[in-house]
Length: 286
Image (cartoon, rainbow, N blue to C red; front, side, top):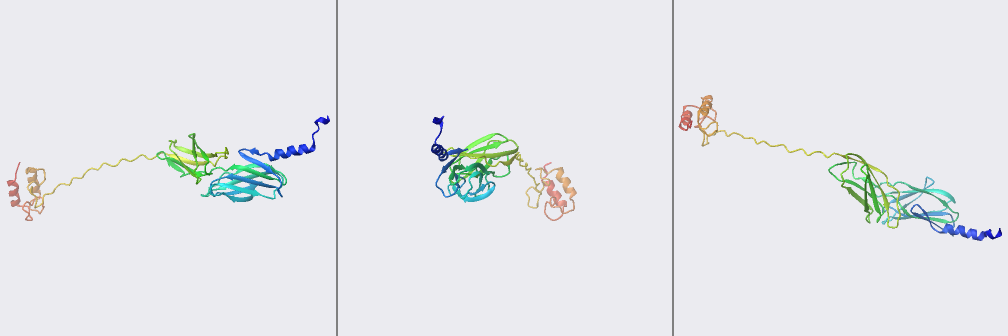
């Protein structure tokens, strides 16, 4: 039986070795180090550039940090109590959009520093506007860690799109696929080149309505204004302007007889009389 008895020093060595070797929680790396004056935890990760990050410990705000212009951040919480803790963190981007809260539980060891690295906070997301028509692209935008890849999901028409994030962290994608009229949702997830993966973003809503049908231009009907003979008209005997001097013109003149109607006053003397009748007869065509 004695040959199976383990040396206490060997047991301590195995325990320490298991603590120093990095472990994985989801896609983040958890490592431990010794020789620190107190119990502490350090978070290292990436978010959108200059994002304001809030850290919570057991649902209470325990600190804040700001990412640099490349989206990297690091925060150390000191004077922690050894034991199991739940930590959470979320980011506020440059447009005051919040990421979902990322939470995890981990045990802190007394007078050791626990480092959680490789944290990739989710992207922020929103539609360009709440309602789109079937005649225009659906524009979704947000901010994320530079050099990461956005996996964008659109429902209720199941669509998936993958595209890189530039150095500014801003991204915008136009969905040109025809979506059905109705309500839709969109959400996203991030990956980076090191294999880190974020949790899902918030889910945003938008609607698609039928584009209005173009109204045809009304057909314009030209208005023809009849030429009224004047005293200077060369066809002044043709009172009704039908290119003939006939009984119709005679009837109009009789109606205007002894009046001052310009149309029948062929000699322009202010009265429709026998002189005008004589001119009419002279130009008679029948």
